[in-house]
Image (cartoon, rainbow, N blue to C red; front, side, top):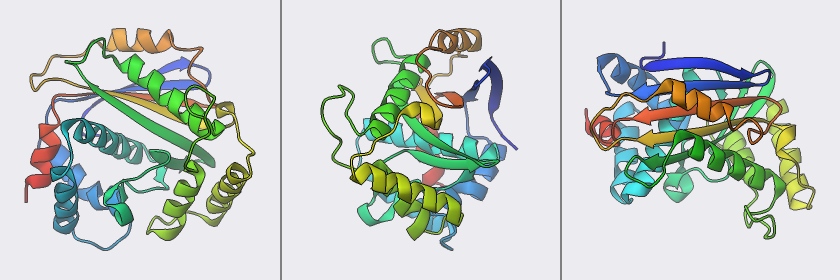
Length: 260
């Protein structure tokens, strides 16, 4: 059950758009959060909900508003993707570094396909912020990561995103199938040896989240869909699942992790 407003649209033969509105965290949404929170953050760690909430609360307390916005956006994208029956092959938390994970924001599988997810977020108070703009940043980041270059295409990336994905799939309580781990490891080894890939070889999930300033204003879904349709030449991947989310405020999530 997806407890918030959620619409799905076919953009092209290989592209789907999901539009999500999160105005409040009501009791139904809280119940779904409670059910999925530990798994999103730590997999099958066996930790209690209250313990993981404390861990996330302590992490958030040390971060600035921009970081909190990005992390909150990413968490709810993970939640939606799980509720849409994708298998999470990664964790929200990077426990060794007391941060959210690095590399790709998400690695998922469903029906024999593997997916790369990247989440970008911004405030409605920022100049020219839009869901489409954040989706563009997300797909550009994914493209840069698999190509081994920064956004300019000139500088090699210092980190191997596939190795990060392999670490999460292999070392934590994620339960990733052996064939997926093998595939990620081969990609990590190729990256290390300078054999880079093109984003068109992968299934992608570019996600754009816009946070309102605490006062709900109903987003124009028709406009969001039209803007994403105009990005068709920039939405790269074998299959593309675009996710556009509108949040009333990061305070909703902060209140949740601070609750009992």
